[in-house]
Image 1 (tube, rainbow, N blue to C red):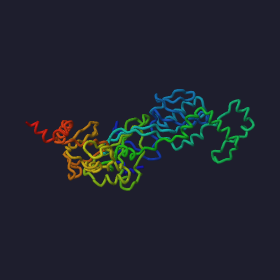
Image 2 (image 1 turned 135 degrees about the horizontal axis):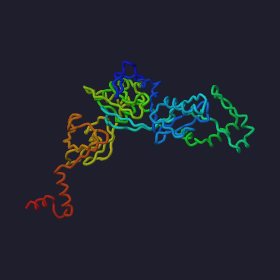
Image 3 (image 1 turned 90 degrees about the horizontal axis):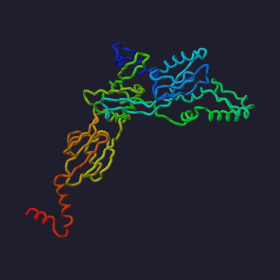
Image 4 (image 1 turned 30 degrees about the vertical axis):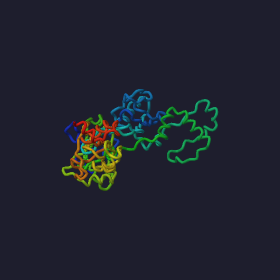
Length: 406
C-alpha cells in the first residue's frame, strides 16, 4: 500500500536489525495476522473434507479439533497453523493439504496517542470475512440418517452435487428439501445461521480510529503518522514500525494510505511545528473530523441544556445558542476532562467580544460542562428576596433594608 519512499522507518523495536514491512502490502496484510481469543477460523481439510468446519478460538486460546482435541493456536499466523496441522494430521491422513482462513475477526482494541482530540484505547466490533459464503460451500453435505434414507432413498441417489467449476445448475425440488434438511441437522446450524443473517462491523482503518478519537487538531502532523504492530512469535516476536503519510486523505479524500488496523496496533500522530488553521475545516469536509460536538450549559442562561456546537466552537458560540445571559450573572465556570484523565475547573471572565480561543473566550470541547454563576449582588438579591417574601404587602424592600441598617 505504501511505496518504499514513503516508508520512513522499518524496524524491530526489540532488536537492532531492520526488517521488511510487507504487512502494509494489501495482498499480504493478513500474512502476519496473529490468531487470538475470539477469532473464528474456517479450516479446510483435504482429503478429509468431512472435517472441514468453523472452529472458534476459546478463552484459553484453543480450538477443539478432531483427533487432536484441544489445540493451542493463540499467537500463530494462519500459515504457521496450516504447517502445524499438516504435520499433526500426517499421522491420520495421506499427504494432508490444510487451508486456514479467518472467518470472523475478533473485536479489536487500538491505542492512539499524540495530536488527536481524545487520545486513548478504542474498541471496534468484530469483522466478518466477505468470503463466508465460499467457506459455507466447502462444508461437506449432510448425510441423512436411516429415517431420511427410508423416506428419500430413491430421490437421494439422484442428487448431483453442483460442480465447483459450474455452480449454476438446476436443483430439483426434492434435492432442495434434502439440502434444507441437511441445514436443520447440521451440527453448526446455529453458527451458520449467525454467519448468514448477522452483519459484523466493517474493516477498521486509521481514519476510523481518528474519527472515533474526535478528529484531528490544527497541530496534527498527518505526514508522519506512526503505526507500531506486533510481530508473530514465529518470526521472532517484538514490534515493527512504519511511518504513513495521510495528507492525501485530508486534501483529496485519497484512501490509498488509509491502511487496515488490527488488534493491539499503536498509532501515534506527531505535532506540527507550525499549526495549520485550515487543516481542521478540511478534515471536517473530508469526514476525518466531526462537524459538531456536544456540550452542556447550565446556570443563568435563557435555555440551559445539552447543545450541539461546531467543532472548534468557542464559549461565545455556546452563549449564542443558549440565548442571552440573565441579569445579575457572574463568571462562567468551565469543567472539562483532560487528556490525562484528570478534571479541570476554570473560572472565566467571559467576554463575547474577546478573540476566539483567548482566555476570555476559549475553544470548547466535546463533553464540556459550562455553568454561568450568579454575581455577588445577584446572590445577595436572592437572599433578600427569600427573607422579604413573607412580608410583601407590609413593608417595601427599601424600608426593610433601612430597618436592618438601624
